[in-house]
Length: 89
Image 1 (cartoon, helix red, strand yellow):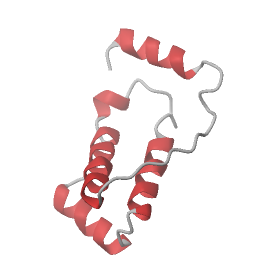
Image 2 (cartoon, rainbow, N blue to C red):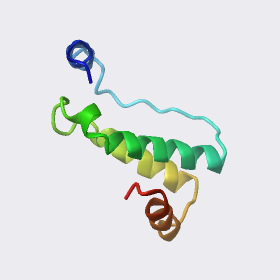
Image 3 (cartoon, helix red, strand yellow):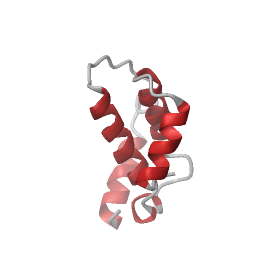
Image 4 (cartoon, rainbow, N blue to C red):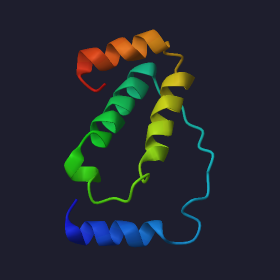
């Protein structure tokens, strides 16, 4: 993350209400869920993107990724194999 973006990101995260949980209902294909989870995983493994963020900042995204895969009814075995095949484990 660029330094200016990091400062902006930290400022936005400090605003009131940002830690408030929201419920979002949407419909997506299992294919889209699988691809979205992979994008999240790749982003979470990008050291340059997360190195300047405070520890724990992206824990919510890890939870979101797992929840999306769970709601799409992918088995844990499938998820493990998928991550091995895509190199995101």
